[in-house]
Length: 132
Image 1 (cartoon, rainbow, N blue to C red):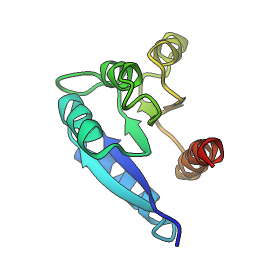
Image 2: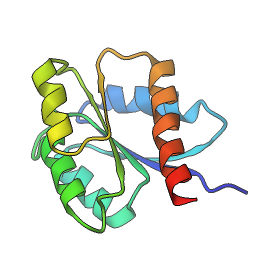
Image 3: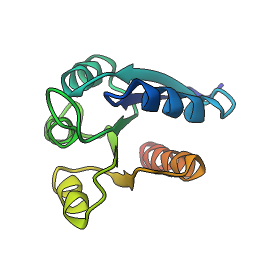
């Protein structure tokens, strides 16, 4: 039996967390999902649970998604966690900022659920092929 990939969904909007959970759980139960309601909660859960992938909103109370991403990527124990920035801030400067803090991928809202699933699978596939 293959272990489920652990994914943390971090967004301050409950409706978006619900949508992301519905999209991610529609796929044959292949992911173990958890949620965080703001940047501080996200970082605490990343440190405690060490998920395989974090879906991070940028604009959240407490720490922004950019700040959380940077802390994850600078921590030797957490740096291999895949970070997907999912945000309404889709300007080129936002993409550059995401890259500068170590994000593995950047998706703008609104997004296609199919594109999100394919992106997550691709990112997780990269990780599993590296570690295998």
